[in-house]
Length: 114
Length: 410
Image: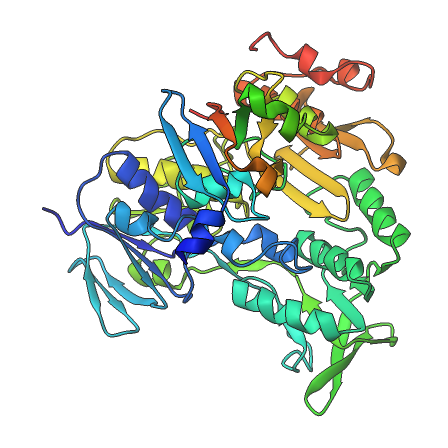
């Protein structure tokens, strides 16, 4: 059990107040689903990862941007209309699949809904 | 300390009521009772990614397993509230337990409308509402060759798309002359008809089922009113839902086509609120009429309002409705309610499977269906939330980005 846990990638979420929370993430899950499962504030995932609601908007910390890559077409369209400010590092976290490459990923949670 | 709040139904709405009560600082007991044996979960993926195996049961959980205990929510699963006495402030459950309460939130949801034709009770005739239903269907789907879907609404079409994606022969039977007719304009219905046909689904419109036929108690075919027999080893029925109003009726709470609530999610009894699929409410943007919304958005937003009302922090429900449906690679997003429209403006070519239909009433934008055009959806959702209009004459011009028609709100 502990061996499995220690092999799990870790994702760090930074809330609007700058508070960091690092949580283990299952391979194949998404950065959104991981946050919801771990009750990370501000990531709602209302549409369950269907790219329909933008309630899982995050800002990827710059060093990770190259690994994560930019938003794809439909996602970018959703982000353009997002309530929170859209930045070059904006992603919908439901579109980020957890893999070994994302171990250590840091994202800031956008304040998408009040 | 008061006896607290009893939330009946561990649904999307029920979980939100309980969670919002704690967010609002409510300190007294919160009991959340759910008849299903599994922790509260999301239903939308059941007719989408869960059927074709893309989404696992674990991914469906609405909250982490320890969320409820952390927030001091007494979550009781596999237990059904069987009776509620407002006079004594006690509810009975099918386990023989008695739960005391001061106030009640009804989030009992809806159940699938049943088919009443002969043979409807045959094995292999399935309804999709719970995770148990979906798991059983997913298992049968693997082995099935011919799948007949009865009902060309969202659930039926999503299930049809999932079955087709698994390579099954799929036929959809719809009683009305067009698909998803209650929710969208003819131009959108036609686009979905063509999208399904293009991917090999056979669709029968204006056609109903006279009987389900079987051998050894297992379904083998669907007999249409026109006499035709369609072979089927799995029949999925998606012909709408009926609100679960039994408890509300027993409590003497006013019900029509659902539990009647006002803009504050309050029922006719001042100690009882209700939220989600079970309710009928005034139109959230116009404040009049009787609307029943079957959506995650409504469950969540109305539940938040209901929680506020339970702690006497009355705020009216004014959220703009939205909804989505995934079929194949078609992402349909709906903002607003199109009922009562008198004009439809189409942006983009429906044939391209990338277009939007904007609905107007007396010159005012009231709703939008976007297919693979999320920017239109987001712009309209924002316009509706802010009470802004996007003039039809400009919206029809595809070269104009809808967002630029909005007042500068950033």
